[in-house]
Length: 200
Figure 1 (tube, rainbow, N blue to C red):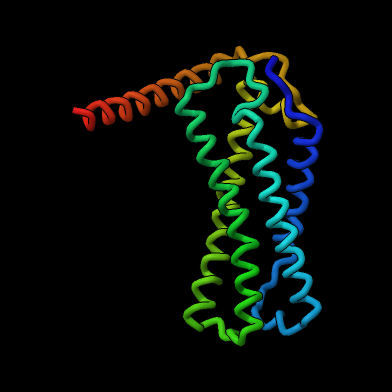
Figure 2: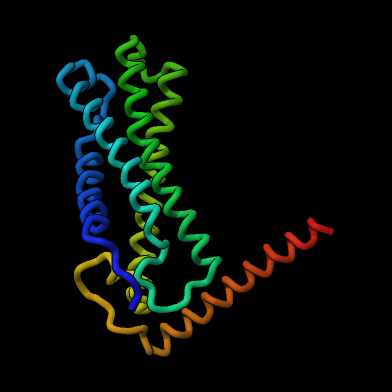
């Protein structure tokens, strides 16, 4: 059995989900709502705290392995994909509060028209970050569920329920996993041969 995440890492992970959900639920729908100074102050305070927590979470979780708790070998291409998704999630979770703070700052400087060039760019960046965060988090959750089905141990290192005892012996899941490994092998071969060609 692989090494589990620490209690602090689990607390940071699950409490952050609540923080993210709250941020999405309470987001401002119309720019005009920021005319309310108390709401503006709340938004700025929340975005600042959110940004600080994301940065702290990133540096703390860097000490954990990408597939913490894995009880089976993990293909390096799979690890690369997983790291890419993780880093992309952090990017969007930093861009969300950062662009939110920029919107608040621009609004207080008189950029109150959503059709204005500068603020429209920031608004679009904020919206793009939100949508991308939904996609990446859905990808992360789907991958976690798939890992649980395969019984790799990664799920149990972070999730307190439905823990795996050992890798699955279901023949259908094993076939899918074997196909997955073959795809990773082909991707690795493709990149390896590409590097060799560049070195010639």
